Length: 331
Image (cartoon, rainbow, N blue to C red; front, top):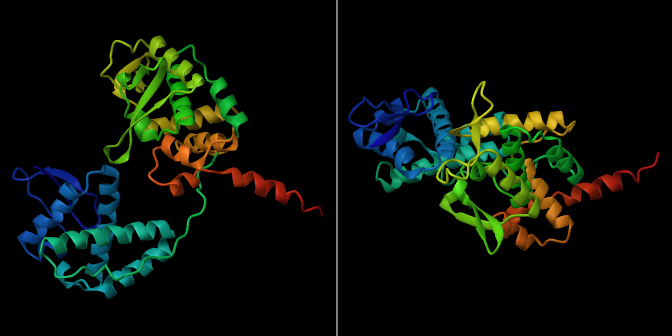
């Protein structure tokens, strides 16, 4: 069984095989006994499946336990609501409200796990209120349709990397795909149904989402798969790295960080000054869809959002209203 071990309160978890390596937990947890240490490790290995969540929670918990040690707390069993509240006050000074709320959630979920495992009697973080944070609009930079079009048209599609990049950006614009879902696609996830090309995306929580392709996206995907010779490798990754010095695609999945760097290079080459990221194209597609008469409900379905409130964060139509109103100030 693989479990995360925190070598020291300030270090990220490292994966160790239980029974084949000495597992080290923070002193506050170790002092509570073997059951507490085992339950603590289970929280990260068993209870949290998403690697990004595991990483963020481990950092928050490590920071909290370090603070508790410095505050004179002798064991995790001795943690009180006042300790959590004092630590959270420090978080709100050093971090933005969303980060502080996420860190509190990590500590709260850890103690929930310890309570159900009968390690501690009550959750000391349950009664601590997080900082108030109301989100009405997302912060993701969005491109104008003309900018997105110029970016796509500027890509050199005479080489495999260009075909790949145009297909990836087009997928995010025209299908509202998350970068993680896009990079997780296999070649077989592009398929024909009802005389139209469709894409299959695996979203958060293991949800599978299928939708037909916009005619432009259909062109991009066909050109990429045929031009890069991927059709025969149905089980292989759709978006791949480029071999160093060869210019040819490998069979290695394109990492998310590489996709982010690629987007930055492509935007700069197209003369786009807006600082775009992976999520910018999802927001650009949703905003364009809504501006052209699409409904929020259908946008939520297409983006595979459980609630239209999430979709509204990607709707940046009000930005244009604000710009028009600003120009009414004539001085």
